[in-house]
Length: 399
Image (cartoon, rainbow, N blue to C red; front, side, top):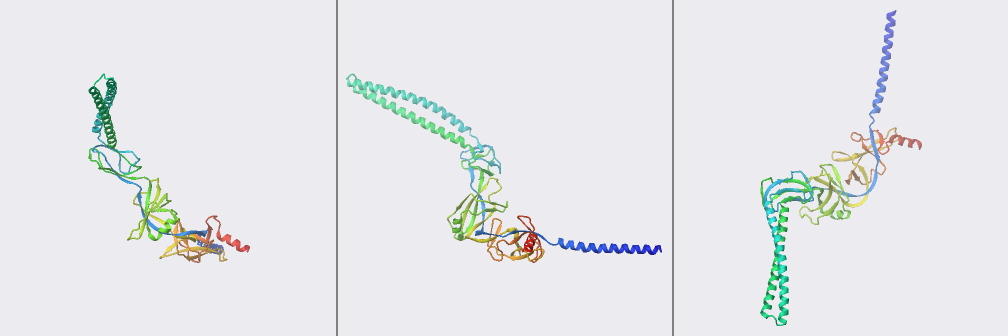
């Protein structure tokens, strides 16, 4: 009897366990089905008035590049730079042995003192000759002196004045020589002509330099130029719209606004292109000459376009499409796949002509990578964080 009761109890317990297992599987399956509904982030589509653009390529170049050369001959006694070093305008790069120039300058300054003393002496002689001339002129009029004595006094005055003038010219010559020697002395220290960076240092201490020998190669810093190669058919549009674009540098993945834009008025006869020089800021120093750049230049008149975030675009097998979320009256909204033909891309957005996509449509910007057409989704509006499905359902119920 006890054995039968024990068997019955075990059967009841087993039945309960089986029942709970079935319930658990059913609930788990429903939860799993709920979790499989993808969550996406959406935002309303906007219409903007813009102009079509065309992407062009270019290269960064230094605003200034110089092979800084020595203007004097002499032995290098000090090199004050290294490759890659940042320098300021007039900062010393290298120094030559200037002892010979310094000695010549010292002698010239001594000669200058002598010349000034000689001028004083010649001035005294001129004054004395003038007085003698005046005295003999009075004596001649009073017949107290001969004409010969008067002529001698006149000659002495002319000689004194000539010597005085010669002494002044000698002073000018010596002063000019001093000025030249001071310039040569200053040139014995080679300096940077502008703010920049040292690309290469070409000399070492002990080398003998002749005038014109390159000491260092510098490129300017602070600003840099983007040389864009532009098709000739864009010439009119670029002139009309001006610097209404940005320059993207691929190496640093950043966009830069032009400081200044210059159009080179010459067409390459073979390529049918011209150059646009765009000056951009490089105070951070992250941009280097030779880096490749792109720019979306204006290529037409302004008109209405639907602006799509780049995150909304799905590119596959040569096609581009997007997903928009629509309320079909069901509990959850449905994702609809729409092909798009991009007119141009600009400032992180793709622009298409109005058509299948209209202003106010909710476009998927996150979670669209594995989305299937017609799939139900949990949609969250990007700006407010509100659930799109709940909002739409409430509006439907109210109507």
